Image (cartoon, rainbow, N blue to C red):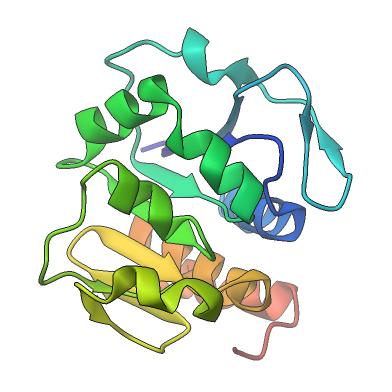
Length: 184
């Protein structure tokens, strides 16, 4: 079964995270859609990415196996203001894995998608934003269908965890060997 993944991006998205996530997921053979708030996204360090589609052009009832939110504080702020992205995540929240790295868990908080007992992690600089939740200092945290991670330095491990959740550990281990990943 072919898996469909949505990766929303906006001006200010952390390019190292988004490229690592998409690269590793595509190595696993999944279909990844870049959806942008604009036709050209300028990432946090000036790298430009041309999205496959505008977020606003996605169908309101589009279904995904996974939605992965990259960080970058400005990108997170921009994505948090998208009513269309909010509707898409809420439409998929009970049937898809929702993943967020770095500052991106703030999007889930802004959309009201975090229960008080959820285990979560984020970039250490915004840890206080999650005082009402079961905050973990781990590199990757899985709590129900929510997966969170800490930042650019944990992006490979986070992405390999996503592959394992989509498929199985053997595929994740094969990709880790192929890219000479030895762990976070």
